[in-house]
Length: 268
Image (cartoon, rainbow, N blue to C red; front, side, top):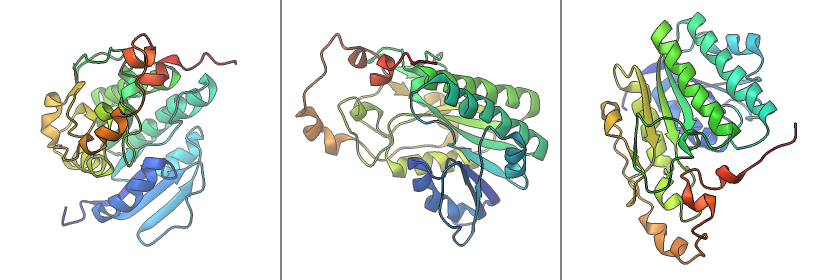
């Protein structure tokens, strides 16, 4: 992307693991990158605006969306856990984001959904982008909700959204399951770029996964994004296959969501 496509982009969840990766990589795409999180993000650098706020604070989020051309929404609780914090950040907070986007005329969003929205599909089953949600916990429920909420805001208000069902995005895969679900940082960056710039995306679901040897997810229905992953988990296969395999009757070995399917229940 040689020329800056946007005046101001918003990145929520900028203090998180993937937010820190995208903070530097998104700056060439815009004149101003507005960063937001509930946690400390450090000082604003050249070409940045840093706004610390809570997704559950509707007035603060309304101000956050003012003057924004498009947003990449990574903010919220990013792991499985009790319902209360997930409800506040991932459900009420996401509604605040989309309501503010509507009021301020923002017409493109990239939403960090998750493979945990479909985590109770079985391993080995190949899912296309129209596969129904089968969330594997409170976190997965919130991501399935986000996919539906963003579809409503497209159908009713014309806000286009690309929902990225992110697999496992780390510097390298951490276990055998991630040989299939791994998304490299370079491929994540390319997916976000395509999601922001592809024309007429409407409401699109796409799996965030690299070009790994074994596949559970079929992105042919999202080909209009132009996303072509280049990396593969193969260089890590020998090391991970030398580790102990899970028992065949372990739910983390049976279902695509891995260990998330076994988490909880939680005390209120």
